[in-house]
Image (cartoon, rainbow, N blue to C red; front, side, top):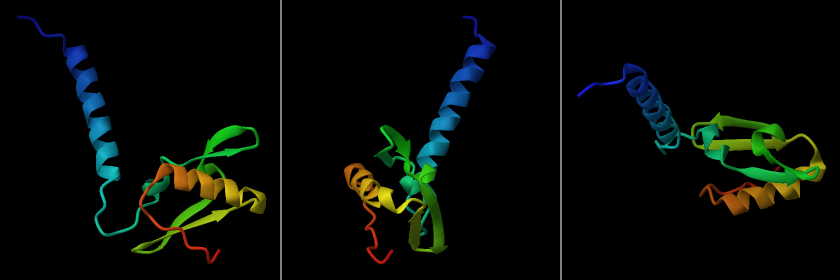
Length: 94
């Protein structure tokens, strides 16, 4: 039986990339901006990731903050978030 070293390396690299994404989604009790990676928002006639519409940050260990740059996109961001079902609760406080 022969082994193709390049094929094995390619498959292992794919497995490692997939594992890194899975680890990024783990909920460890500390908030992570990667929680919003799957959120896609429909604005300007196209779909965009939430992080391209504003600043996503972690001001405290168990709090995420999303500041949308264009106030006209806030409702669209809320819709995108609610469709995604991330499990986090948006704060209406702005």
